[in-house]
Image (cartoon, rainbow over all chains, first blue to last red; front, side, top):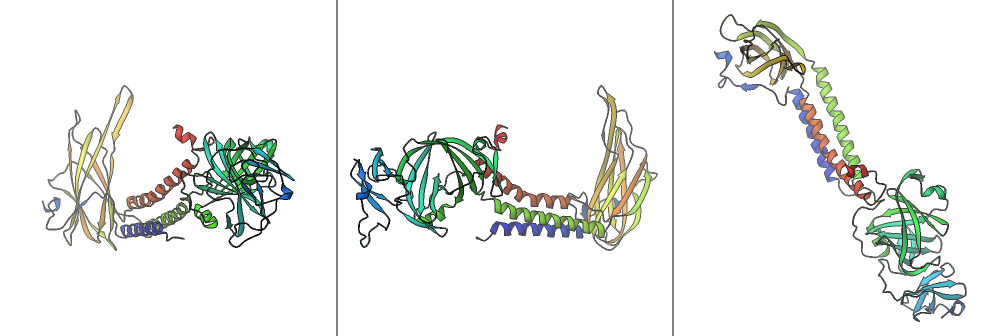
Length: 49
Length: 442
């Protein structure tokens, strides 16, 4: 039986997807999140008015 | 010229002779050429290898059934070739070229003294090994009306009913075969098997066909491997095994994804950390400051839910969540719009009085929430002047990453499914009973 190369690649992709999901949940990552993060040097909005 | 079979004897074997014990020779009454009979006593007809005339081996006499002057067509397995196929030695003793509506295929009669006769069918480079079925799976008169039949614990679907005739004959056969002999047949498929019933002169013959890879035939009979075209009716779908494996991997991954998502939802439940209400009309210039709010334990998503009963106007809120320890801030804008009215079609409304915004990866720490509302007139309606309710939720769970992961892992199995189905549709495109016929009509 020849080596199931495509299955290995797909399995690796699935493992990567699971890893991403775990990381996203562990870090509160949101796809299509609405906020823009500003560091203190670049913060220019309400807090400093 | 008739020939007395008793006067014919097998020649003495000589080194390198191709003749084997049991083979007898006779002379063709048509052309005088030598005719070999490889299954004497079992074969009832034999085709002369020189001129193609079909001879009747009728006991002691050899009668000319049909005289031929047609050129021979070279069979893929030469007459007389022996091969070992799945542990059995079989000799090719006969070759038929069959024809139906201009379409042709080849049939090879194989013989083994212990097991008797078998057939190999070659159609567009695809091979089937045929064994007789002694007991009919269903009654003969029902065979040509049945949509399916059950045999060997499998369901066979009807594939084709047709009438084929003999276009060319070589070698010997266990019946008196003639060119243009015709028979009606009905084929049922359950890949890699097929069941075929043939009806001619009131007789019904049932045959079991098994799809064989061309490489196996080439190795068994030492011939050139045939090149296949199209998809045979009972050819195993080459994507079946791969599809099963891919689906297993995808389902396992989906189950694990659900488990991961549920773990975080249950282990880190969403918590309301702030609920306030204020007027959109500010007494003092500058943003409304809410907090301090303490985010404990870990980096997590934060959700701001805002409610304002606007009607026929809009309300924008510039929001900023600021870490009072590090001065890092998260800025976003919420736009709440809601319009309603009555027209000739009745009451209508659009927009919403609720809005939710997700902020990703907010580290633990002490925060304040700054909100700057603004509103304007819309038509005859003035700016919004009313309460604004805000709720801040820590450890908010977004399902967007989960859905994207599920969508991504479904892509490849979907691709494999399409390929598998495409092959199956090609298999059935020559059948008038295709289950995919409605797809093509659409």
